[in-house]
Amino acid sequence: MAIFGTRLERRRSIWASRVCHLHQSGHAQLDQIWIEYNGPLTMEPDPAACLNSLTSHLLSTGASEEVHLSMIPLEHASSILTMPYSRILQRVTGWQRDLQLIRDNGGTVLSAFSSNTRQQIKRSLQRYVELHGKQCLVEAKDKFEAVSWLEQAAHWHQDRWPDSGFSNEEFVLFHRKLILRTFSEGGTRIFRVTFGDHTIGYFYFLTDGMRVYFYLQAIEPPVHKHLKPGLVGHAMLMQHFLDEGAQCYDFMGGDSQYKRQLADKASEFVVVRVHNGALKYRVEDWIRRLRDAARSVFP
Image (cartoon, rainbow, N blue to C red):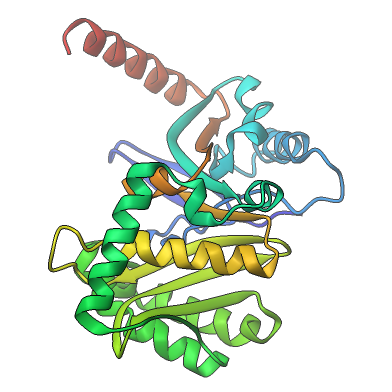
């Protein structure tokens, strides 16, 4: 089962195309509620074959001229990429830390990091304690406090990201509803990292069984180069989830320095476009290949 949003989209003001988007609408404001690990809901162990069948059906029946599959794991895109007129529009790196491996080795999260990362975290922890007092990791006690913390996190996130979802009313409304519906069952969790009475960051997670998915952080802009609120917060949270019995701490998509420092595995998501082979698309593909060839010769 999968839901496709379909709309008529103008391509370079030349022609309009009927495009199907997997679990998206095609409207940028709505689709800022970014889906990762996108794909159909299946009872079978082969989501790649299901994606292939769904895409082929949409194109062959005329329901769509193009199909866009956003943020699907690369391994699930394998069969799609063998189809005629398919190509990857975007690649996004995802990062994970295997908590079960740390548990099996009998270590702590901090001991699993490189010596340089450990040094940065320890130095930052010491400095925060000197400035504000004892460190503390606090989880929202109920769904209403969780929503409140999400709203409090908005200004730091907007300061850090010009395209922050907190500037999008649809984004904020979606996550408010998601928290109100799922917090009590543990589907969403929000934490605050403090030193004394001073908050340095909010961290928002989605959870599924023994895997925790880091969705969003809003951290205080550091006033000194040795203060690393992101590294400190994630180190504390990874240890917390390790103690709870979680098996994987998933940073999801997005290539950032702190993710590379804290993760031990990398994966890849792709955005794939498939069209129906109409002449207008084949001409466009030919022009694109010509452009890419020219760029390789004249970078």
